[in-house]
Image 1 (cartoon, helix red, strand yellow):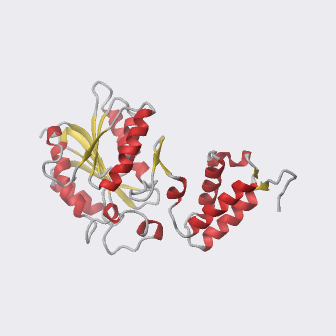
Image 2: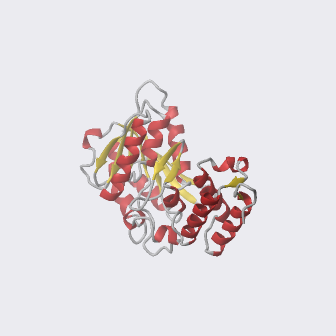
Image 3: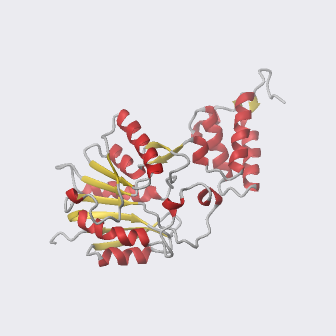
Length: 297
């Protein structure tokens, strides 16, 4: 029944009930997801929900429908149509890997590294396995002086890459150059050999035998997830390209499965890179490796 004479309903009890429904269905973050969906329906930021204590009946119905879809383990980002990286929103949906919050740590490291270079020259950045364009576009937004290249092989994912790149350019960000190419191809971006300041990568890295949540297993593209039996097939094959592309003193950051920190560190070391460092995520699990090209090579 309506909670006031205008037919509106109190929002917080609806969110509480929705969170309970999502918890029953096995969703890992039921309350945040319920709040995010409510904010999506209302067209407001989640942090401002307290300013909207009432919801129209038709909005409540739409909210309920979204909760039922989320309860079937459709990813939250597929329901809202967006994911976040840094200060930008990215369009996401079926056919492209949904950027994860963990990658924000790699992004923050990348920006900090670029800051050490100063602003005397335009840094050249390459994002391998760009997917939605998350890292490339977030870096271009944060560093408009950067010359950013983004590489993606999957044509379905590239549809989303182009859509996001066009949207960011239309919003005033420095355009990113897109390449439909294989990151393991020895001829990749040969025109940039020895010139790149920073290479970032969030490649397929999950071992084939891993058991995944339905949101991932049923909705993220398999090609974007799995990196062979040990999860290192793509990283192993693209590491020589990273070493070739970097200028002397340039750096790389590569995300990996939480079982493979030492394995990725060994691969970049074998490729001739130095100052190799393993970085944990906020839960303390190995998440990405950074390394530098020797300045005297």
